[in-house]
Image: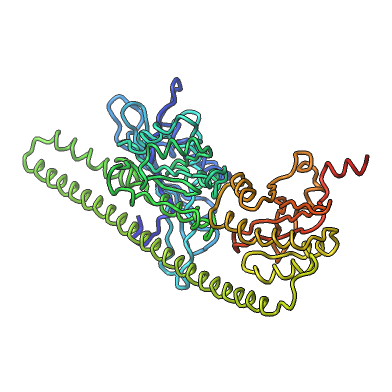
Length: 554
């Protein structure tokens, strides 16, 4: 590997033949060949015999594109090599001074399986002078996807079957998942996604995460409360994953110890604050560069094949030579070769450790920057709350008389609870035309929405059913979170329940029902979690529903 290079992606897994399917060494090599052939369909000679037996190839028209293949160590009576390796080099399309190198090694194992190791890295030209290009987020080359989805092989990392799709945990699978986490022979991480409490909402897309981590991890998820309860039973507090969390379980979880610190997690608050794309990037950057830490020995590069061929040749010469002096010289060469191999492996491990250190440092730096952003955001929010409090005090000082109309109620509530509630243009318009006139009822309801209902949404973070129940118990007022099936299926009616405010669109289907003097008032609102406030989108007469429309037509 070049001395100055940056690992982009690496993976390592075994390819086990599917039951009843006849496979050969060539099936693995053909997957590699097909991948490169799709990149250069005009280069028909890539499909020839040399790709299997070994050669050096240059693209006839693209000077920077090279392929080097090595095959070696043939067992007696067998035509397939034990080791095969490829190095594929080409210029980057985005950064002309960047060169991409892909090392692939295939090792034939006992029992008919094959070990596949891939290392994709990039480096800048030694003559390049200029700003350092940003490192792209690690993604897998197409050959990995092809092998993971193969109909002939089952890709495994120890006891863990790899897949490009998320695995959904069902009721009764808690114990099996627990055993898989602590299995000694699980050689790749498991990512667990949990829904926000008492909902089925996941904060990251499991399909997207599984796609980004293909070849290096398996994504699991659950959406049912019963499954969460099962996992809570088997997993200790420090190892659990719940309420929107995303957790990375590294191989060989050691329950009953302080090992939980090794299994990184992202809390719901962090995911919401940074965004799901930042979580994808952080996990992919970490896991797509460290797979060699988990998989066992195997051929990794063309240098490995050359080294094994030399070692094998030396062993045969030692066995064949009878001259003691020549045998001694060959023995010294063998010892030297072993020592160089040991030093090479040590340097590889050192490089891995240094890359890990750099990545951990980058993670700590990102964490510090995130905390700084949080502190700045907190300071800004504190200043905004202080301004709102001052505005509320000013509003109280400026009240000459109690509100005498619904419009005055809304105006005053909007000033007193500005840090908790905001009235949209549509809401103010609906207030001006409503027939509802009971000032006291309207005042009491809006005040309770800005206090009791606000706390239920933002302080206690309950599920919708619990919010409805608790609000009714504490205020005696009806709260509805949805509309009837026929109303929801009517696009025009549902468009009445969408408003825009400050450049953002809100769904104001949830609403509070008020009755007084044979008239009713509906206060529709949305929950703005980003700015921690209730957005009032309608405060007036009953919005049209399927039922009211039918009555009018009748």
